[in-house]
Length: 86
Ligand SMILES: [Zn+2]
Image (spheres, rainbow, N blue to C red):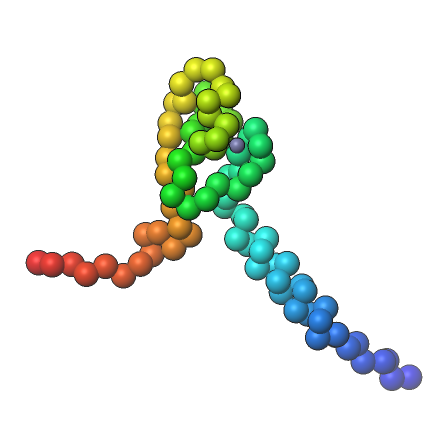
């Protein structure tokens, strides 16, 4: 007895691909521990001894100094082709 062919709806496939790509973008990102906001490119993130990462807007709400601060880079940072002058 032949089995019925499984058909994939085009819109379901588009949704699945979109969800997969959005999840991939958020994979390496660290959100603010206080407000949960995703940091913007160029914004500075502050790391505290507790391991919490806090955005610039939430930093004044915390006591103490962060142990490290780093700027949020574009996802392609370091992968761009650069002209080297010798
Ligand atoms: Zn925040």
